[in-house]
Length: 344
Image (cartoon, rainbow, N blue to C red):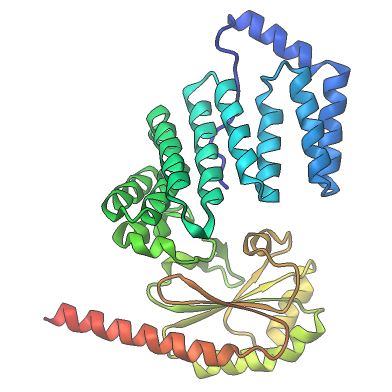
């Protein structure tokens, strides 16, 4: 989830009183202790107890501590407790005195409701999410997250023209350098694509200095290979990956290998010695791996020419090659149809 701007204010108080009040509760030993406890428990992945600690901090602050409420919201989202996350976001709306902060909180509420609707696409919950996103946009028209997820919400409600408008609005608020720019463009062109399971957008700098952006592959099939030099199963899979790279070298296809190596020199040396000529990226802090939700390697993802996540495979012996052949055939067929339509 993307956070664009966050701060809170008690708008009914004059600035001087607000400053004094803020200092009073922020310097309160009980408040400081509760926040510290929340941070510690979060680091220990004791999320339910962390929520209790942050709620205690908010209570000490008179129920208007946006920072603590924000932590509660994010933890509830992490736990999948979307119903209560929506209620917390509503408390954040009430605690927000600035239009942009209120917009973020309303967008949070929309996101929680969007997730609450789940795969069943409950119309009443989706309509509530749409209303929340609309309120977020009314308060701050450049709230990119609200435009993007309102587009996804409207698509799930089968309101494709309205969804297209929201994706276009999202594109107008983004920089072309933003990792999500190309995806928003794709969805604006074809809102139904937003209903598919998509790989998280990302842009990385490869070992050879090239920029690799998932959403700018231009109709190519992508294989993402998470690995490490110290991983035995990964090493045993390497000949298979090299075979795939050679077999599909002249096809609309790209491999990106994402390493968990912390030792950059060892990683570079391994790549050179093993003639790994395709796109290489070192994910030392596991941030990209986390966005894909993985915690074990080797791990593969196949992504079709529309950016749709088609398969996820873990461990040795996965039929990566068979899946790629089908996806590449589909990509080539789509290219031929596109060429034929242009010729006509």
